[in-house]
Image (cartoon, rainbow, N blue to C red; front, side, top):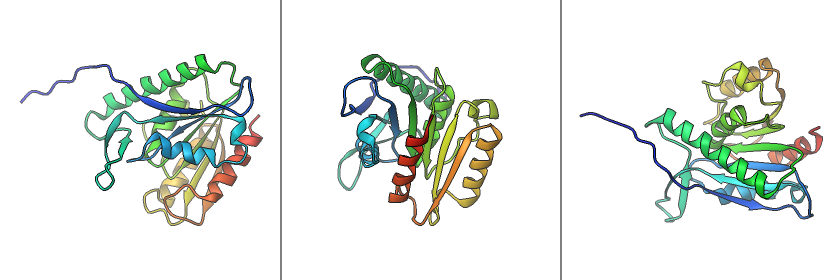
Length: 216
């Protein structure tokens, strides 16, 4: 058997909630977890105090499938099959979303990326590859990709890194290593440990609100 790969065009999906007031607004772009849709991350972003002053964007992974129990359409970011090609496809896709949002809502004074679970790794990759450095990232329950070197992580100016203390997926050791790697790269890191499991908790919401408010 001979295996080959071929590039093909496809369409992605993202959701936008414009700010309450007219004029340029800062952007928060969300990346959902495994077996979720863009709606799930958008709902999380909308709970943040002060979110009405931001342009909220939620990007849905290209790998769509049906949730077996509910028949709901959900998505993931990649599998281990053709992983490097999937990363390249996703980076081009997210860059396209950033460009499209920038054209439709120009003049954003800052942009922050926010990921949950599997979406965290994609978020860090997108931040490291963005045409211009993002102003901050919020990572909840997911790790910094191992392939991102110090120079790539240095493009992340500020990071809120969150772990539930009962989270069996995102371990304490991985969390500590992520914080160390980001600090070694010169990122302004705010670690958050909160009393919960693998979830986006009220503690995360409060910490993210403060993080957004204090960005320069």
